[in-house]
Length: 72
Length: 142
Image 1 (tube, rainbow over the protein chains, first blue to last red):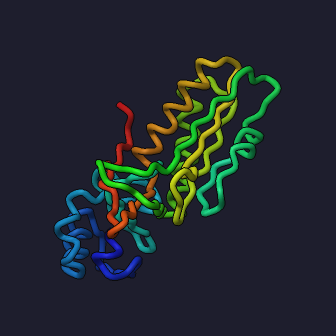
Image 2 (image 1 turned 90 degrees about the horizontal axis):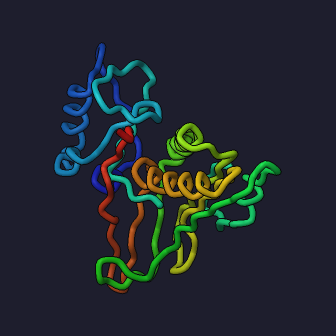
């Protein structure tokens, strides 16, 4: 779903200094405004681990956008 | 055996993977593609995974299930790609000394898989397709 809305399945971003959840989301939505409607339901994963609360991104970190899942 | 792949699921492989001379019970769950959803006829189903993360989540699920139930082993294969009606999308096999733990662990594993695995399915109807409305990931069981 995110891929359809963003038009790509991965993108590299550069941030200055420490980036927390809010800063990441704000940057993501400014580059991909079409994700705005769905983002409240989308979970985040940092380096393949679900990131439920706060986080600080480091150089090389990989963020996954995880919409509500429907496996099984 | 914890697998995410587009290969056809083989029940015998999963059962073999959990076989153990100390096991008195092997329970399996077979998730199959159904021909209807919410009153609409479904003609096929497509599954997509965040492959790298799904493998990691399956490992966590196996650890979590083994910690909660006294089982000997667990095997899971979730299939991705386009599936026809009647094909297996996911299979779980669990072995334990006694049947109670095998049944309970098997049920727990599929319930948790459906809450945590980064996999998404798309239903295909005669006249179009739609992503299934999913569940927000539940990382904790409490």
